[in-house]
Amino acid sequence: MDKFTKQFSEYAKSVGCDLLGIAPIERFAGLKPESHPTSIFPEVKSVIVVGKRITRGSLRGVEEGTQFNTYQLYGYSWLEDRFLSITSLRLAEFLEDNKWEAAPMFNLPSEIAPMGIPVRPGTPAPNVLLDFDDAAVRAGLGEIGYLRTFVSPEFGARQRFFVILTDAPLTATPVSTENICERSKDFKKYCPLGAINTDKEEVIEIAGKKMKVATIDFKKCAECKNGAIPNRRHPSGRPDRLAAVCMRTYMVHLEKKGSIKNKFANPFRTRPAWEIRGDRTIIEEGSDIE
Image (cartoon, rainbow, N blue to C red):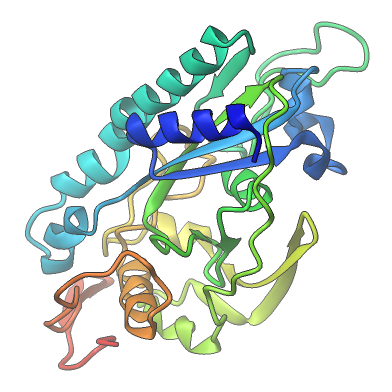
């Protein structure tokens, strides 16, 4: 790591960054212009992925079925709109104070269709949107888990990302070689609505890293009453599943398996999980307690 990258990394920790990954622009080779960083910043040399954890305690009220606002604020909207936004802006300011241009990128759903026309020949229509989970893999922060959610060795699925595009030639983070998720077909049982189809698997390859994933019926996720939230940015975006029973159970599994570095004195789940199927709330003794 060169001196400036080290200074930048140390500063990132000081302003609240929990995860920091750097991908050279060459790792994005093969992406279409509609989702390529150079379509936004042609001179970009480094794609920086900035992450903040979702605290496990912000999921406590959802797990008990008694308080949902804490997660929606501290684990979702405020975490992105305030805390992560401020951290990302501080990092962009640090780069520009050192004479490197920095373009902070907000995490909008990459499923949103273009909302304009090309302004010059050979360029995509606005708005070009990056897939932040894809970028996080390229930046060496982890992998796409079997349930099509990004997982890191530090926090599992409990993090959110912003991206900064810069012309600074920073030292790259190696692509992760860790296998956090064992990609078990047993994960199918985590969804009470049957949205996880383990009979239809595919292999995603990002920057040479191959990851097997199940098929997820996101239309069912959008109807889920077990902690999932409709995408607040755009109706075409995937629902936020991180507080849903499927992902909470997945978190319990990863913690019990010892896959996550963020350890706790007590287990997250000590009571049977609640589930809503149709109009019925079901609590089965021992259900999904890993």
